[in-house]
Amino acid sequence: MFKKFIASSKTFSYFETTIDISNINDIQEIIDIFKTLLASFFANHNLIYLKEECLKAKWHIHDYNTVEDIKNEVKDIYICDHC
Ligand SMILES: [Zn+2]
Image (tube, rainbow, N blue to C red; front, top):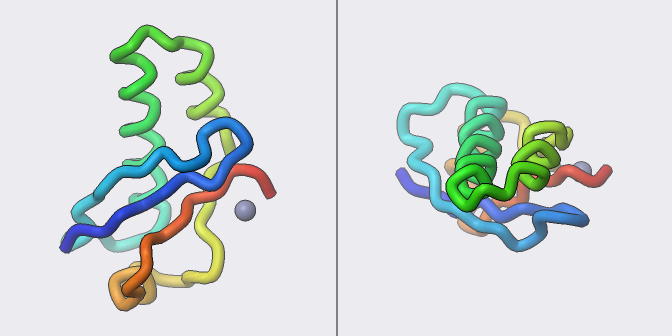
């Protein structure tokens, strides 16, 4: 099951990526994958400061308690780092 995740962030807003969440068991796993994909994008383009900022950011998802809640959501999911 593929779902779109979008950054909500002072620096990274509107970055978006699709993640297969079929075999994912907790929300932290989704956040880790999202963070890794964004950091890899910067690393691939040698944007080392942006990569560091991305890895340091305190990413979290509002309003959903379980991966099931996210699977049941029809809308795209925002991953936030600025509150
Ligand atoms: Zn937030």
